[in-house]
Length: 217
Image (cartoon, rainbow, N blue to C red; front, top):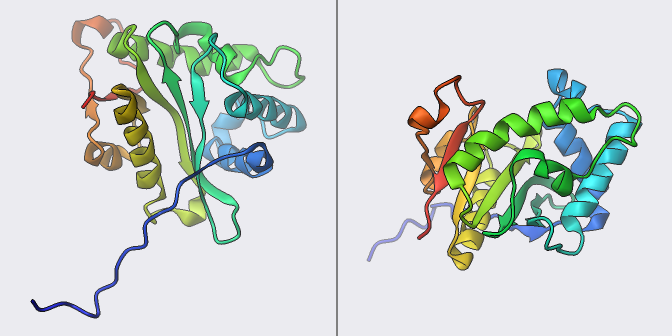
């Protein structure tokens, strides 16, 4: 059988789990995703850093029955520094990832100067309604955040992270949910996500995102 000896074989993208030692590298990546107007909600300040450090320690800490178990898969550069990461939550049937539950996942901010709980609630809570209308009380994996450093994009890192979370959902026999919109819709489609039409359930105003659901396999 003839072979193309000159063909390049794509190197698989390695995905590993973040550790507390990675937190100083994860915060600038998060901030890059929320530069400009997003800084009003996620300030690039000492207070904003303190809140994100608390949040990441929540994600990377011991599981609690009071909140979904969080996973932070990362893609690293040659020096081992994270350049792309996701925040995903395993939402069991008895747990909630909607309404004010963001405080249990991310941590409260009322004791941190310069970080507004009102602005955080204004960001997280509108996204909770389409999430709840799409998933109800069904157990699922929720991809809450996904980003890649701007200089490292178009290398398959986001695809690798979405695929990693999708495999996790399959292993649990769960569906997967993500607040879609903007870049990355093609990646989601290839991973099996479909836009969930809320129809008359959301008739008062357009939802703030495109609810994307990957059904159970």
